[in-house]
Amino acid sequence: MPNTKDTFNSIATVYDKINNIISLGRHKNWKSFFISNINFEGEILDIATGTGDIISSIKKIYPNTNCYGIDPSKNMLYIAKQKYKDINFIEGYSEDLPFPDNNFNFITISFGIRNTLSINESLKEIHRILKKNQYLLIMEFSKTENFFLKVFTNLYLFLIIPIIGLLYGKFKEYFYLSSSISNFYTPKEFQKILENNFFNVESINSFNFGLVTIYKAKKI
Image (cartoon, rainbow, N blue to C red; front, side, top):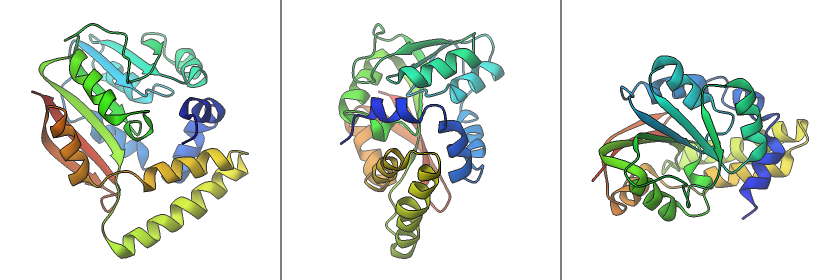
């Protein structure tokens, strides 16, 4: 697997623009629904925060919260820090979170869990720093079990997205990201992983024929 930190450092300046193109603008609707799942309060952490769009949206709606974003990509965080001055951005990995136990009221991660070095180690760390009975929200791409949808999806992932990346000089980076989407879990498989790491999955919502999934999970 390529070094994901290097991958995201490389694409930082075009990341938001290409996201908008390859999702046909739909990612804004997904993210809006994502943060509408819960009434946020207290201490909030957004993991794999990228350029900070999720955590900044939470802060805008809930200005009295204390918001943090963490990401291993220095270049992504540089852009986030320029745009959002009222959020604490930290460089770091989800497998080794620099926070005390039982510290956060809510933790979010959107389109980032699949690119961690270890999903299980990340979930253990998230469980450690999340307060008891509080929530983890995850939005991620999902593998489909529908044959015809799988054919269409693979065509889009391994032809259209890399070509768009190529137009911006980022072919290998977007080919890798397409591969990481293709190799991720089905919603049922990922729900089991969450449960094995002591989270109770209270709801699963899917979009785009099941290719994007939002998980609302409580620490137990």
